[in-house]
Amino acid sequence: MQRNIFMKYTILLLFWFNIGFSQSPYPQDYFRSPLDVTLVLSGTFAELRSNHFHSGIDIKTQQRTGLNVYGVAEGYVSRIKVSHYGYGKALYITHPNGYVSVYAHLSKFSPRIQKYIKECQYDKESYEVEVFPSPDELLITADEIVAFSGNSGSSGGPHLHFEIRDNEERPINPMLFGMDIKDTKPPVLSAVYAYPRDRNAHINNIKKRKELRLIPNEKGDYTTEPIEAYGDIGFGVVTYDQQDLAYNKNGLSNIQGFYNGNKTFEMDFKRFSFAESKHINRFIDYEVYKEENSRIQKLFVQSGNTLSMLKDVNASGYITVEDSTNTVYKVRLRDFRGNESWLSIPVKGQPAKEILEAPELKPNTYIIANQVNELEQGNVSVYFPTNTFYDDFHINFSVLNDTLKLHKNTIPLMKSYTITFDIKNYSVADKDQLFIANLYGYYQRPGYISTKRLGDLLSARTKSLGTFTLARDTVNPTIKPVNFQEGKWLSKLNELKVKIDDDLSGISNYRATINGKWILMEYDYKKDTLTYDFDDHINTATENNLKIIVTDNVGNSTTFESIFFRK
Image (cartoon, rainbow, N blue to C red; front, side):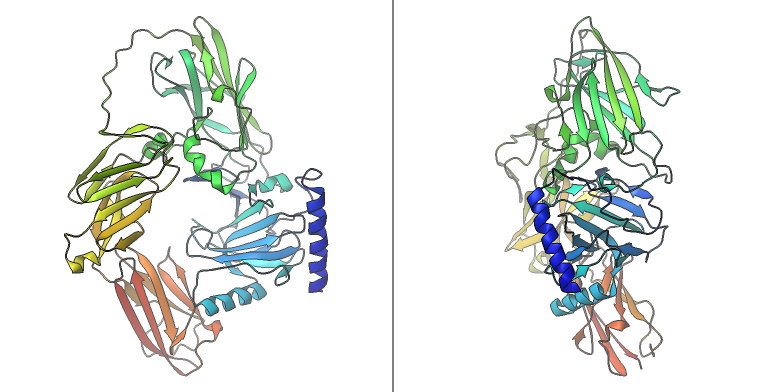
């Protein structure tokens, strides 16, 4: 049976490669739903997330874990990844038509897949694993239960993250394949902004970003008060969509801009590549996002924004407003079901009156984006590779008492850069406990950044500006039993659970054994727990010695040991 399915898969795959995408790019009846409940979404495809576009849809699981997750079509398991963060427990199935379906934040896999991955975990003595089964190892039949929904990884609550990718690993909106989501509501517009392109342009006699007063009408569309403008002008919108069965504020499917009836801009949220997802910070107004937590989607294209979702962009999306003209700029907002909202902005061409502006106070160092930039002061150096930034700009750079101030985190970056601290003046004992931290929040709390040490140099790579310092972690991690006590019989327990924590640099790794044999303990960082399933049958003796070693990111370590009995 397994061999027949594999042969069928191989023949269909070869057939698909011969005909290409052109004849049936988005098959409507090929994929079933991954769940057998009504599909209600908490997240839509390509909606705006922190530093990336959302690569799938998030399906609500009725605030529960453990719902059956089905393979959406026959195929084979081509990848399994288990990690503490990110997708958590994730499954990838390659289908005969060339697409790959992805299922993430799972609680566990189906029994035969669970057995397969646990053997890999015990073989590697690691909870975190990534494996790529061969096409004939884990064949999947239509309507087969492949996993159970969960809340693993960086999930903010129980749900199923589901993706469909093409043969180039590009995620595609799963709703294009016929998945039924009830949505009769048009998109909502909550704010609109106008942007002068340069110092020769203005909006209402202002030469910087200007919020416009939004006026909704009875039909669900919007307008603004007429604006006076001159020169090259761009616009930006804050918008979201809501579906019928959920209150979540989700992303749109398409945004278009028109000037005097001619299309100037289109953003079509249909498909993208993971490599370009970082340019979301160029697409939105990153400064407003970091300072006000609001994502303005810019309907114009600046240098470095190479998003493939951009279509029909004319003159980079800007409009040119001339003197003594009366024109209208329109925006069409659409969700996947075709519900629309329109925005109209009346524009009157008017040269700027004399504008008295305070002289601009520029920071002390100039960055040239298309070359290497190196900064150094005291015991701190900073290395920016070529094209770390989109634009040239003046950066604020200063060092005082092992604290580096590197501008504000309001400038988007394309690449990571390196910060290096010289720690030769610290004692030997202190050097072992130092790390580089970014200071965040109102109270400027230190947050660990992955730090490497080479002799007397500490270095860290990061992709955001801000304030950084040397921090010292002198406290060992803590380990506390949750559901058992020393010397007790645990015959009725299905699992062992302990709570682990570290006060500053965070948990780096852990290792657990029973009677000297490594055991698989699942780390839930959101609950600070390690859990061992007795069904793994590692303990065979009546008297058992549990030993757990937990190490933080600077090498502080704690060992916990406990004796328990079990029949």
